[in-house]
Image (cartoon, rainbow, N blue to C red; front, side):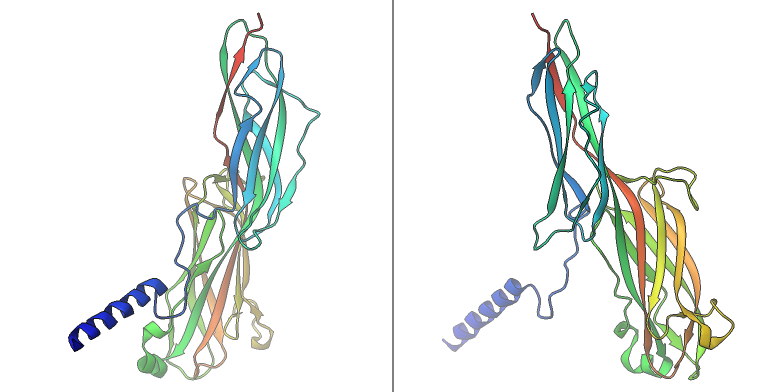
Length: 308
């Protein structure tokens, strides 16, 4: 009987652990690519699936901002309209969309008025919309500077880079070979290679408005990437010959290219001034990618009937 009681208790404990998901604090479980890709097109519809020659109809593209940042200067164009004529007097003005509030996304729509061409027999024309918007994605990481005796006491696993990224169509990851082991107890300059990895996880592509930096064409080109450091050990030793005049890490790069529209990489060697090498300190790295992104709707197949 006692054995059965223990067995029941074990089952209950196992159920509680599974239901809670973990024994420690709740942590983000990660996300699937394009689960939160910034601005998404939710619908592309027409007034009617078919129309008579010479008649007018409207098409509408609906979209939501489901990322972490403001979608700025949202604009829309028809990249396919077949033989339809577009009314030039009905134009959608650029708009900004705030990020979601309590999981409720902010949404908007663009509408175009189309006139069907004259046809002598039934015809199918394709119509498709493209939405542009400006966005930012931020990536974070921690670089730890730790004396050798503390590393021996706590182990390397106690000092993680702890990377994270805001939700958007691009992901930004900070990579560095750390923790940095300090062998000299006095202040010192420490050179470290900091790498930024940028991945396109959204349903569209980056498209810059101008050529800049390492880009020879606008498609797949990020406007700029800014690397900033926050913390006592984030002063950039290259900013001044005077230790007292050193500035925090703050470097900006224009025109960072995504290879085949998917991934980009930026590597920078930074010399950090560690003011107190006898204690464990850190530098919080923030990377901000600023870019213009585009997403395409599904294709509408609209049937045009001749007038008899």
